[in-house]
Image 1 (spheres, rainbow, N blue to C red):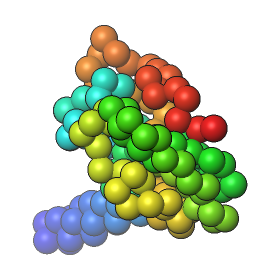
Image 2 (cartoon, rainbow, N blue to C red):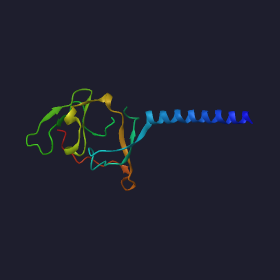
Image 3 (tube, one colour):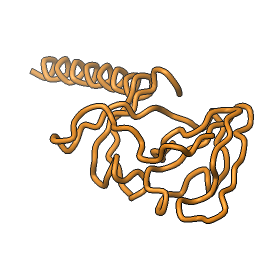
Image 4 (cartoon, helix red, strand yellow):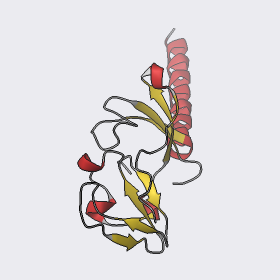
Length: 145
């Protein structure tokens, strides 16, 4: 009786370890589900939306859109600024911005972000069900010159 219990316990522990290893590899190298909070990406992504961030194509705890790649000239001023300012994105960096420019902490605050800090790419919106699918285009066209 004790032997049967011991064998079942060891078997359960073995399956649990196997599942843990598979789950770790999937979340680390394939992608992860992210529950979003904050107004930075409104109206594209709102509070409590669940998105899938894939990591296959590129290895932030913040969700922002890539506005400019290295060598691009981007507009660094806000939408209501009278005088527009511009900068060039340096080599090995990207320019990130939220869709809600009035309420977003992004490259306009921090400057260009190194490629090494990018953890993934949001490719699908999963929740709420009525907005399931590939993310819509950014409402901030014209930020790259």
